[in-house]
Image (cartoon, rainbow, N blue to C red; front, side, top):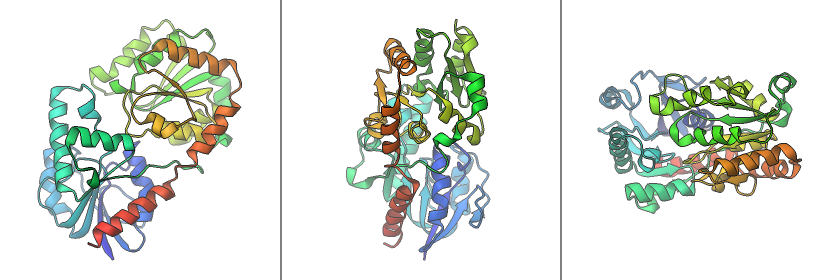
Length: 350
């Protein structure tokens, strides 16, 4: 058996948390003897670890909390920087957003320190896309032989056109949907400007994601919406249950994904699986993930995005939906789990 320990404290998060939740069961099966730090997953041994992520406390507590293991996996770059009771380590670095995007100097310094430590301490780095692999090489000067790309997946049993909700249609139709967080690189300013330029004044814009409690630079979209001439048709829904997000995808005219930087980006695939057309930015990994199954726009051009939104409203989108169905089926959590299990077996048995 390979004694595997996983830091699962981000299990309830979106993005990284989705990855953790979908991999726990496959990683608990032989030849792995799995223990998780923090989090609760039925049938899996768990060690309490309440230290906040990115904190000095977590670094001080890691050595005494992590059990004796053959392999320790950090699903994010907040890796233990001191010696731990694990023979080998693997880290997943989903992106290097904090180095590539002009965040504050303090954030960049901390992120660079942690990312470099993650690369130096780990026997292997996993990342979500070829784009992110190249970014890691560019910003952290890592040998490409030490980086393995494993794509995340989409749950086709969870996301489906059958989730369409007549109640949501009556309340909002026709509407465009954004799903994600409200950080600056998500480029919601361009999305709001594009919505204001729409020829159709009947459409609505639904923004789903956490915005309360964000720092001022990230919460600026809230003030932008309040000052918009179209504010009566823009709905800040905040964080909503996953069951409702599934219905919102299936009932939308299109998902709009205007991000300036993504290591992967799950919402477009979730939308495609739901029969929802996708309007996507040409930035970062997004074309790699969406391929020919999205309508693309320059993320700096509100006019171009607005034109694409008008097109979606004014025509049938069966062809785009069909491409989306085909594309999302190329990504599954079974494939992702097989990739992780194969690598963990190889590294853990060395």
